[in-house]
Amino acid sequence: MNTFTAEVTCIQDLTHDVRAIELRLLEPDSLSFKAGQFVSFEVPKEGQPRPVTRPYSIASPPGQRDRILLVLNLVQGGPGSEYLFSLREGSRTSFKGPAGAFYLRDDGARDLLFVATGTGIAPLRSMILAQLQREPNRPVTLFWGLRSQQDLYWQDEWAALAAIHSNLTVVTTLSRPEPGWQGPTGRVTTLVDERVRSVANLAVYLCGGSGMIKDVTARINAKGLCPVYREKYYDE
Image 1 (cartoon, one colour):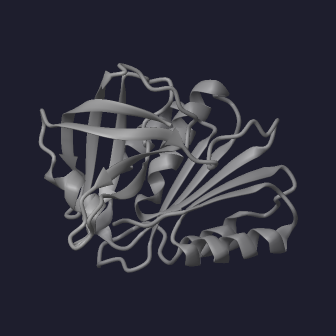
Image 2: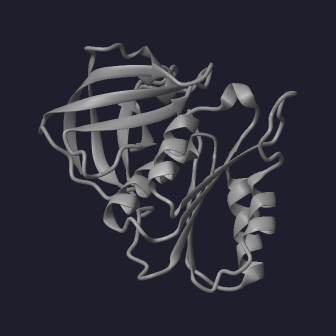
């Protein structure tokens, strides 16, 4: 893996605890990666004599090589998120990468289903943007599970993309909605149960907590055999 130096060019607080950080590559000045891969930061951890390594998926598409976008939760006591949340616009940082075996494949003519919970959306955003550019007519569906309205972000972006790409379907479900929510409720597993009728011509990408990955994989397998690619996601 190569080591990159980058400058923070934009910080956006997406929710009360989710932040998007854009990094512009300085040295080298471009990064070639596969949609879905991650980069790693070596960060200090209290009580540890050496830095610890924390991976973060790239949320931007691979066609944008001069900068990358990271999306992460703030986790109290998490060395990775506390370090990245300490960065300011103009800050310089370094990371290694790209790496990871969870990336967008060429699955022929299969329809694509992406299922995410929380910030597991990051690598799937990269994949979906890359896919829409690569094959704008292939059916693409995203099921995204969040907790409540205060955890919503990127809804306008997905709606705008779906308005342009008739083959893109995006469904956000809330597991603990507050009054006033008009969309689907419950976990993403419910969407898989109710809306995936056949897997005969499907490839599935899952990113989120281990429980979701296990449950959705079981539900997909119960419907038949198809490629299922998984990435367990956690924030520190």
